[in-house]
Amino acid sequence: MRIEVEKTLRASGIARQCGLFKVPEVIDYDESTGVAVFKKIFRITPIYELANGPGVVETIVEKIGRCLAVIHRELVLPEEMIIPLTPELDQPGERVFLHGDYNGSNVLISSDTDSIVILDWQMTSRHGGEATYGSRYFDVIWFLNYFLWTPMLHRLFREPVLGMTKPFLKAYFQESGLSYDSIALSRYAKNFFSVKSPARIRQANWKTRLLLPRSYILTRQFLKFLLSLEIDVSFGREDS
Image (cartoon, rainbow, N blue to C red; front, side, top):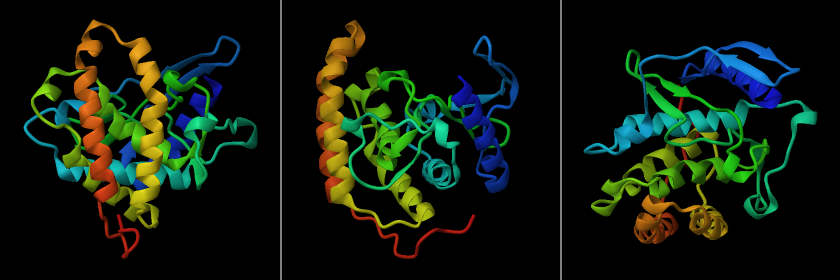
C-alpha cells in the first residue's frame, strides 16, 4: 500500500502538469496499519461501458493511449520501490515504471468534464500485486486484453477490440516518440496470452467458462490483426 500511495501521489503531479488525466487525491495514509484513504470521485464511467456501446469513441481511446505514454515517460519511483515484473512477462526491451492495472475498469471518463480519470495504481493481483517496473508492453497489452477476456455476452455477437486497437496504439507511440514495431509487440502479446491461458482455465467460473472459446477466437483475430497493423508515427509526439 505504501507503494500504491507513492505512485498515486507522483501520478497526481504528472496529471497536473500534463492536464490529460486526473487521479484520486490521497486524503490519509497510516503506515502502521497499511490503510489509505482516497477522495471519492463522483460521476465517472468506466471506459468498458463506453466500449460496449454502439461504437468506440475514437478520440477517447486516443487520449487513453496518450495518458499511458505520459505515465511511462514521467513516472519515476525511488530505487527501493523498484520491483521487477515477473520474468515470463518482462521480455527484453525498454523497461518503464508501470501503472500495473491499466484496464477498462480503472480508466474512466468524467461525466462532467470528459476528462480521463485513472484509478488503482497497484499492480494487478493477477500478477502478484507487487511489480512496479518492467516492459512497457505489459500495460499496453493489459489494457487491450481486458476487452477480449472480461466476461460479457456482447462478445458473442461482435468483436470488441480491433476498432480501438489502432487509435490507442497510434496515440501511445506518437506520444512516446517511439517507432511502432508490429513484430515486437505481436511477439510480446502472443507470449502474454500463452502465459495467461492456463490461469484463465483454472480461475474460470461458470460464466467465464462458457465464454472462453469465444475469447480464444477473438484473441487469435487480435494477434493476427496486431501483426499486420501498420502505424505511421514518423512525425513523433504530437503536442498537447
